[in-house]
Image 1 (spheres, rainbow, N blue to C red):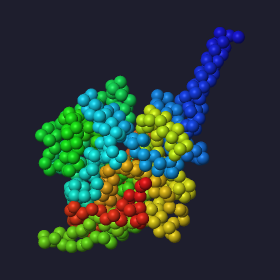
Image 2 (spheres, protein in one colour):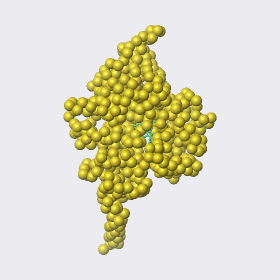
Image 3 (cartoon, rainbow, N blue to C red):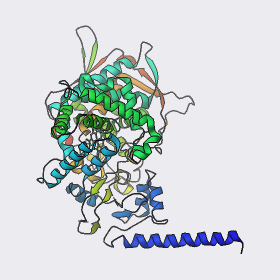
Image 4 (cartoon, helix red, strand yellow):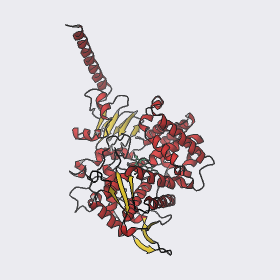
Length: 541
Ligand code: HEM
């Protein structure tokens, strides 16, 4: 045998020995009561590579249709338990201190916000106090976001945000009545400014284009930032952008939160500074909060606008519905006004609301991650080990044909409206737990009312005032972009590429101003958030 042949045999024998050793290791570190392990073709590597693709959980659901929950053992990560079964999801959501989102959020903020040891100590102390506290005490995160619930503070944020949308849409098209833009870039600008106006008020740092640019430069590399400081040298512009955002928000908070900021900003600043968070850490945290505030709202708005305007049938159905709630009048100076009461979009436009929910169903890759601080027997059947992470991927629930019918992967704008009239729907109504666009349970996204109002208002204003058409250079019409490049941690994936469009004023709507009225201090009617209502928005478990 040649020298090369002997080396080859040694390497092969070494690999076989390694494989056997890893299989044995997997076996002895897995209790038979734990959920079954899958994807161990090449131990640790198969799962590690699979997790790089946001369609992985859907494929595993199809490959192992009978597993309510399973274990993945990826390289460099703790064990992952992945849940398929809605019944188990509801068990998990009922025990929000056993399966904690707070631990995930705190860990994430340390990795991306450059927090000092003093701030980390405050986070640990407050999280522990919550775990040890009374059953119904709000988590630290819930305490800082209370102001986003229905009520006066949210109404005021909505009013400021919608005023900004109105102003930006007024400026969008010049005297030539037509403008060409890249749709995602344009929506990013409009939604970033309007959202942050609602949150930060007249001293909004995001009014400065340099701050907006810093935010998007920072958020573009979160995936690398979470790998830790050793990876920061590869993303220097993002680290510099983070520093810039910290400086800007330190100035913003330097004399306490501005008097005319939203109740949300004041509540958060009171809570953090009151707990002993250093000012600079509050400022650094604010950069990270952009991820909650902006990074899902922008792509969600993009997909919704795209689905509406790319289909004449969807556009007509939604536009007719909105138009039926518009009150026409003329201002004293002769300006024609279309008045739209924003709450009617949520309460009286079931097709529009359904089209929105359907867009969030199709374009959602939320992981629903929870930390497991102690060993726990889930549903009396599955042992879950401490120090591991549990995932409830939205794709598995959102795109499952057994839940949504054979066209589960297709965008069907009236799906939720039909489901509320069961005699019109060919498919059974899915368990509300299986619609997870905004998460579920105690950590259901607190910003959902604000984000939904903004996106519905934006879509309604666009439909009332403009036509949007693709640039259509190749005569091929609209394209719905893919999302392969989106990261595993994105709740709403961004499109892989942008789309050139022409925005043009509708002939009959020239120089018409849309006015949005609010009943200040009013609560949203219960029916909007009641799962028994039409295409209700809050049908979460
Ligand atoms: C369309 C836009 C949005 C989407 C799709 C979205 C989605 C989500 C999801 C899926 C979660 C995780 C919930 C869980 O795992 O249980 C979440 C959490 C959260 N969201 Fe949103 N969100 C959006 C907009 C917003 C906005 C505008 C804000 C703030 C103004 C916000 C603030 C938060 C916060 C603070 C949490 C953490 C909740 C906690 O720790 O309990 N979100 N969001």
